[in-house]
Length: 190
Image (cartoon, rainbow, N blue to C red; front, side, top):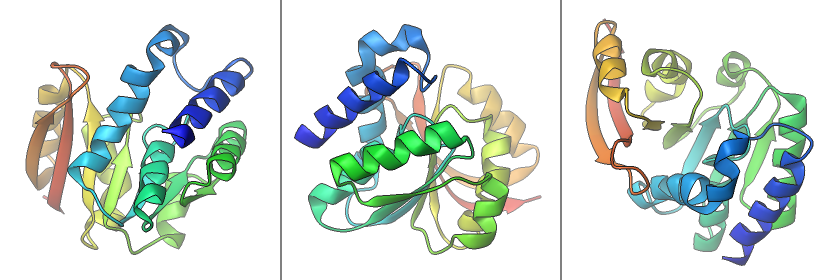
């Protein structure tokens, strides 16, 4: 808990100078961002290797890295092309002692250099079709995807199924009954 509290304090400090999350969501940071992120680890616990795409303000990547630190194993590679956000993420990992590394590159470049993951995560990055496109290098190697999706997730699933075949488990969000975590495996481009 102390690591998460330190991360939130750091997040609030940096949010005053760079846009890490929508300002309207900051008063509910624990529920809206921390708990929302932590539920991913609950769906895929244990010492695993994660790649978090478009890590932005560290949700869910830094939260997952902190939880992995508490288990004594695993690692999160955070991919964030925005240099200011990447600097924040590096500081957050360093100050919390979380098990992770930051890659300040575009996702397409990260796919060329990073491999061997058990899980791929992303939150508030793009629609499901785009997420599958970005994640395919890791999904084809056996990683499972965990994507946060809001109220319009059914339309995104239908749209993605027009291009992709995949196994899907929908987990209702513990934060918002209208939101889900999509757990996706066995992805194939049609």
